[in-house]
Image 1 (spheres, rainbow, N blue to C red):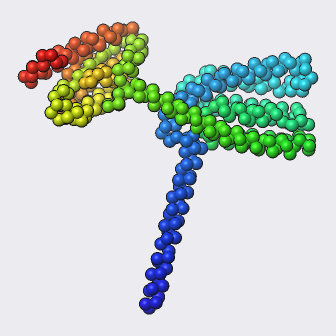
Image 2 (cartoon, rainbow, N blue to C red):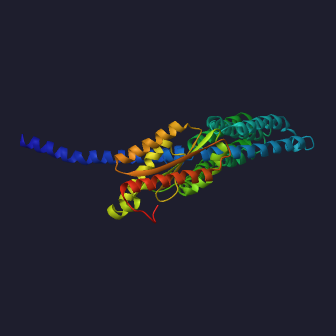
Image 3 (cartoon, one colour):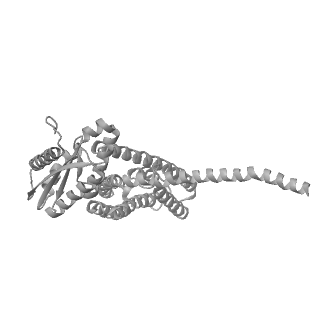
Length: 386
């Protein structure tokens, strides 16, 4: 019995390292899978970061698609004309015109794509990529079965670098057309160039997949960096609201975008100086953060700005005065619940092309009147202070 128990204890002791080792292997495998997913699905950045730069990726793809589709059309037209004068390209004449017309359609779709048509634009990118690959395959096999392929290899190395997408999709596209090329070559190519073409296609297809994945990673990181720089230049770091720089840049947008009525709400946080002196700057920062959150909750992130130490401005287009007043009252109420106080002044102007600076000055004056009344009620002499 004792011996059996000892054996069981011994077995348990020897089995524990095995469990730990399996867990370590599972953890390593999970890390490898996560690393592969991060690189193949999101080009080396997180899913959230990839979503943040999706607009930049789409705009870049659209611009490149329009530019290179036009260049391709011009090239194909020139080659079609030359085919009547040169026997070297005469055999390819029947390929040029269909490819040019399809490429022209690709350009028209890209030009007409709006921001919300991201799926259509992405499909257009892969149609263009496919057209060029098929063009290269036909020129490298059907029209010249006795010569070693050059066009398809060149396109294989260059076309994937023109666009940015999830690497896994471009890699799939590359190897799909490598397989199509290999199958076509087996049926069409003469024996003495077949082996070299198949090897070249596989080798350069692999190189293209590696290079395109790396380039997509570099471009995504650049887009992300540019977006972070832009965000820092446009965002107040304490409250997360838009800052004065963003406010001044967007003034024209409000004056031209307003159809009926434009409201300006000017908000000043009362007692920030006293809060900093009595409870420290951390308490003052918390007060500003809370007021910023309340304003953003009522008026939205897009139109709410922190333009100074304790000053906030909200611009509201085409809203009724009753709604604006109700939101202001809610801001004041929520501030008072936390024993904070704000002075608010607002003004409105009708019609487009409103002078936003003049409107803001009127709202600011009303805010100062409310602030003066607040301190008079509290029996505090501000004199030189606002």
